[in-house]
Image 1 (tube, rainbow, N blue to C red):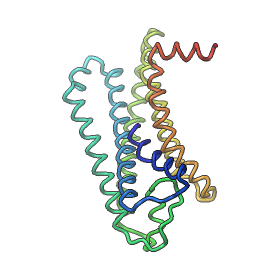
Image 2 (image 1 turned 180 degrees about the horizontal axis):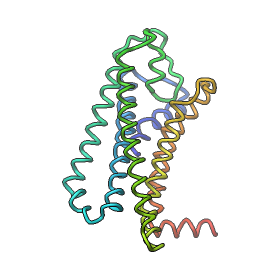
Image 3 (image 1 turned 135 degrees about the vertical axis):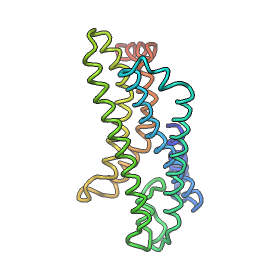
Length: 238
């Protein structure tokens, strides 16, 4: 979360304070790479966290075997490595295209759709291939998350005590909130109907999906902390 914010916000603040809108070619490539890296890594880690909740609720007796320290290290390494390769492929492909429609991006940071608008070629088979691979990858993670939560809710509803059900739900709610925020804003920003698209709306949605979820995620997760909940309650009640 901190990495994705630091990739886009400081440069945007610098340009705003100094009344400029410039970024170097190398800086744009680096910004695109790191933003893609942190965003995709977050989605992979959210998928792993879903598996963690599935095992802890549906297979609690096997938790130590399935999710030991070695297994967790391997899954985390796989998430970061996959994110690195994914962002490297997209960055290398995007910046290998010849640009002939100027050099002005309609965003506050370097984003793949905006860079592709500057490309000389109307269609790019490599980019379409990468987008198809990305869609297949993210759809697979999404299906896995939905399947896991269906099993989790079925297991929770079979818990006889209300206290046990509440404890299980409280384990899942922060993860569900972060996941819903992350997916809903990102999906709408990239899959909205062309009829409602406009430069101002695209800019607002880019701010929402690149800044708001990473900023809110730490707060959502920390709401499980009893001391923080007590402090928020005192603040709300005066």
